[in-house]
Image (tube, rainbow, N blue to C red):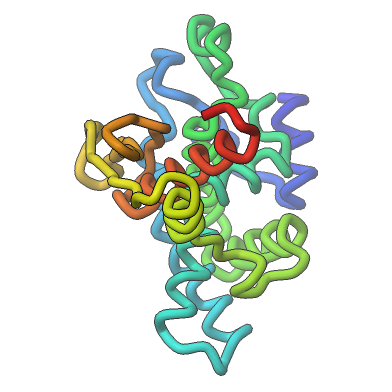
Length: 226
């Protein structure tokens, strides 16, 4: 419980119902009668609403398209992982030995899901106003300069420009797999240039997976590893 107290201090919130926060921190590999998947589902919806309202109020002159791009840059696995790392969430997770030995405490998917679950638990116990206050504080600590330019990176466009310049061709994005239930399906996308696969990535939508795969390919190209 001492580790949970440390997490509560970082959240600036103490749970009255400790079962809620324990459930939010419990990965399915831990083999308990409960895990954090239901709270994750709820937290995802809560964060979507909170971030959407936050951007709506913060940027009154932005149209729907710009607001959607900004929200997509914050409400995703990478964004939630950064928030989870900020509150050092990995150290508090309840994992199986196998998952822990496999680097589970630093896996983006586990950290992202656990952060969503924590938000779901906060919402159930403290209500929308309190969870909004906590979420926005963390968001602004992680992103001190929130704007369209700082948040939205169109890796696909950048990669296309680079491959056209280097190889005279454009990348192709191929769906190579998908898994998970409908409400949190993950899509795996491969980037292919001249019939050669450059990188793969997964995401909660095909667009997110394409952007992440393009980002990985760009990093490899910039290092000269491809």
